[in-house]
Structures are given as C-alpha cells and as structure tokens.
Amino acid sequence: MRMSVEQPLWRALSGYRVLTMLYAIGLFVTAYDEFPRPWVAITYYVVLFGWTLATLPKVSTAANCTKRFLAADLTIALAGILLTRAADAASRIESGGPTLPSIWTAGSVLAFAIKGGWRWAAFASTLVAAANLVERGAPTRDTVHNVILVWVASIAIGYVVEVARASERTLARALEIEAATRERERLARDIHDGVLQVLAMVQRRGTNLGGEAAELGRMAGEQEVALRTLVSGGLVPVPRVPEDGARGALGRAVDDPGDRRDPAAPDDGSGDSVPCDVRTLLAAYATATVTFSEPGSPVPLPAAAARELAAAVGAALDNVRKHAGEGARAWILLEDEPDELIVTVRDDGPGIPEGRLAQAEGEGRLGVAQSIRGRLRDIGGTAELVSVPGQGTEVELKVPKLPAKARRS
Image 1: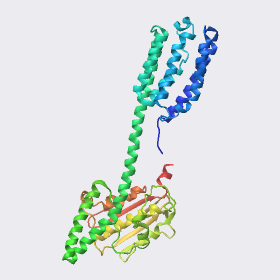
Image 2: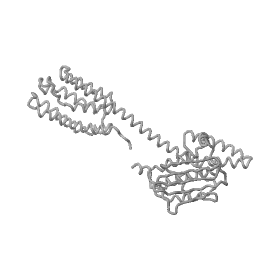
Image 3: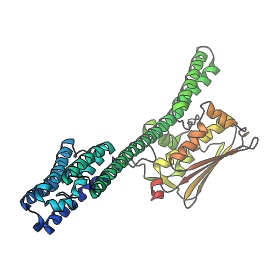
Image 4: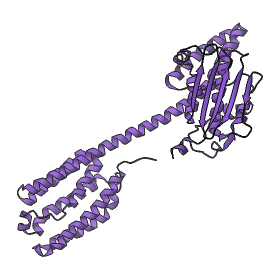
C-alpha cells in the first residue's frame, strides 16, 4: 500500500476552501447595504460558490489537481480581487475593506504549494500580491502585511511538502532495500544449505578417490570458494544440511528448497502459521552420538518458525561433526518456557579457538553468523554461542512464542 504524507493536506485544503467561501459570502451579506453595485458581487459569489463545490474532487489528490485547474482557480481568485473596485465603495477599499474572495484566495495559493512545492507557491503568491496592490491603488501597511503573510506562509508550506515527499521516498526506498536484503539472505541460506554443501562433499570425495575424481574435486573446491566469496560479499548464508542422510521429518520440513518461506511473511494459506510440535523436528537429529532431551508434552510453534529453529539446530550439529569429529558427542535440550522456547546444543569437542569465528566470517564461512544467528534473528529470536578451548561448545537458541507483530501490538 502506497503511503502519502501529503494526503491530509489535501483533505484540509478541501475543507478550507468550503469554509472560506462561506466566510466571504457572509462578509458580503453583512455589508450588503454598503455596496454601490451589489449585483457585481452577487454574480461573482454565484460563480465562486459553484466553482468551489464543483472542484472539490480536484483538490482531493495531487493527481486530480492538474496545472489547468490550478491556472483556472487562480484566475478566479485574481478576478475577484480586481472586481472589488467595481462592486465595493472606494471609501471601504481605502479604509482596508476585504476583497470579494477575501481569504478564499489563500486556498488557491496553497493548492499551488501542495502540488508543486515552494517555487509554485512563490509564483502564485506573487500574482496575488500584484493583484492586491492594483486593487488597493497604493501599497498601504495592511496590504503589505497581508501580502507578506500569504507569501511567507505559502512558501513555507510548499517547502515542508517538498521535504515530506523526499522523506517519503527515502522511507519507501529503505523499506524496499530491507525487503530485498531479507530475500537475499533467504536465498543465500538456500545456497549455503544446498549448493555449497554439495560442492564441499564433491571436493572431499574426489580427493579421497583420486584420479579423474580428484580433478573434479579440485574444480568443485574452486567453485565453492568463488561462490562463498560471492555470497559473503552480497548475500547472507545459512545452515549446513546434515550429511548422514538421516533427515526424516526434518528433511521434509526444512530442506526442501521449494518449501522455504519467510517466517515474517503473512500466512498465505499454506500452513506456515499453523502450530507444529518442535519435538518432532528435533527428534530427527537423535543418533547414537546425539542425545535429545525434550519435555513430556507437545511444544507448539508456528510451522515457519519451527522450520527455521530446526535448521539452526542442524547447522549447529553440522559444525560439531565438522570441527569436533564424527565421534564427538552432542546433546540437544529443548525447554518450554512460558514466553519462549530454549534449545541448547552442547558438544564435548575441543571448542573454538578465540578469534576463529571472526576469521571464518572473513573467509566467507558464515555458518554461525548467519546459518544460526541469521535464522533466529529472522523469527525474532536470539542465538548465543559459548565456547572454551578444550571444554566443548554450547549454542543457546531462544525463540519467542508470539510472532513479532503480535508482540509489537
């Protein structure tokens, strides 16, 4: 839905034109006996009344307010100012009596300001100032005061409108960039989960087999490095898929590239907002070396968030297999708190040396930075990693039970 910071100004201008038109007519009615040629004023007010009501749609939006309308509207305002001498007495004019359109004229100038900014406002208010000086015959203090007031006010409003439009464009662009960045992160996670893992596996297997397979592995390794560089430079990667083939429910729920969705996106009827039991997804990771501890009752979480949480756990376990060795043991603990879910993944490996995570991120290996933390951030959660060399690594994942929109409301 397109925003419009200036739409309230158009609504206010519509009301202003109607009220000031009635005000101008009321001034004439109260001083009717003082007009030597009231029929001139009556004719003008009939035109002004009909024009104001008929053109209300023209001042409802910027698109409807065309240049042709603005020119005609300003012409009626200027004509009313100049016709004052033909309708009113010279003594009233010289004593500072109002013109026929009175303050309705400011509505025409404001239309120029809202439509075209301060330059258009300066042009329209200059013409109104000239017409007032001609009508008065001499630049009296009251005339100069009123002219300057209209001039300054219209130019200021025009400038504010220009600033508001620029701010609106900047905000819209920022929202577009944010949406594009989120989509790039999602795509990068898919690349990290699929393509990079396959290339890494081909490199390892090819090196082990030797011969032509070794050359194929070398080429796969080069492509992996090139793709990691591309991803880390413009995109944001995600978790590694398990390599043991024991995917079960998790494989069906998480690793299907065609089934990835943004957890923050509204439900499209596909079931992303339907709660599912997190235990079912995490239980697929339980093996002889991975122990899974869970509550005795179901742990519901919207399906989209549950998939991202399970994938983050898979990334943490994949790091255990890769860095701690196939024989390393790992423990998964699922805790169901009143306001959030806490999943802790702990291993008995050698731990992560100080500075290694920053070094890996610089090399484009963003498994922890984005595969784990990035996924949790997307669903409104947090990920904390604690590692002491020689004492293993612990990853604590926290996911709020309420969606981000519900928490804000």
